Length: 382
Image (cartoon, one colour):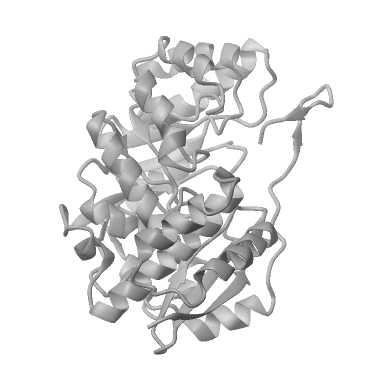
């Protein structure tokens, strides 16, 4: 039994799929992607694939170690996302071979269903109260929204007032028993973040995400002193070694590794176990495609400290395609009362519509995130 081929598909709206096939015809699917850098990650997958072809696909841990440690340079978004997609596909392939879902191979379920949240407001949030109320009427029990558009290092107090008013309108619309997560998206610098988190405490948010960029650990420690709201981050961390210093600092309440960026199922499972040792919750990052969501739900099924799952159905990025467009059975992601069942099928628990994937890949995409500027013309964080 050997790995015979790796095939990549760049599909709308901004995703990259990978199919790994063994010499007996059994195949598994992964989603190796850095949003806006699909071609770069595809090249990395092709390079790493040279180490994978001819290997026994059951040897997932050893393959992971070779792909991570076999090169002198390691880590970072591109290499770890390429590795993540390969890893996902190998777990999917193995599960299909033995008729087991990934969560069964990782020790079995600790829950039958997972709470999900929905996005409202887009990149530049405006009137979000009605959108949040609509999501509540659809059965969701939590939403996430961006806090703001661009903010300068030091900006006008009126901008803070606008942010506070907007988030306050959402809380007033949905009531106190509804979860509201606010994503600062790394757009806010330390001085403004301190002011904002203090003002937002009264809304009893589910969490504040990336109040400052994760490379600024010293700033994050300072910002954390100004709030009692749980702090979440991790979508721009790519391995257990990246997360280690945040656990040691003791200022992150919720980690958000992305199973398509943080080394795949193998590595994300280890990161979650580290988090449990530090009494830290897990909310896997996933504004991506159906393969990433399926892999995330497999992990949610067997991670005791997971509490909510991001998902991209209806998200503002999904122009031209949706999760369901690439599935044989879209009902696998049916949301009921704000929850989704942990998929029970073999491997990742989904069936990819390969005909739809190949048709979409013939069109491809060239998605790029916008470049924002402050009023003075300087580049702003997006």
